[in-house]
Image (cartoon, rainbow, N blue to C red; front, side):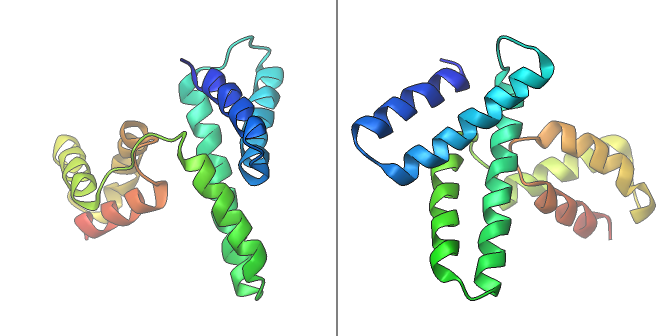
Length: 148
């Protein structure tokens, strides 16, 4: 089952069980998918592209929640975090800190990088290999720590 098919099935399920918050979050994903398909002129959406879109939406929810918290609007922050939880179901399992360390160390060894000057080379490869498996900021922090 493709990601888009899973989204459509979950929309039906949320409608039947009258889960308004979940339905709203899932519809935002479908909307983003349809927008991307319209932009590219594609009739199908690849799962890899779909995962990138969901990651972007999760990051938007997280940033919005942080902004609301700093503004003293806990109610709105809570709503964003709830939606973020509904969206994270569609993402692949994230790497643990130990797994991330091993993966980044392997990339550093493979590239022969030994200083912070070569961080760009390591990040380019790490971003491609770990896309969807780890947050970009976490990867960057780990590369910095291991190259320092």
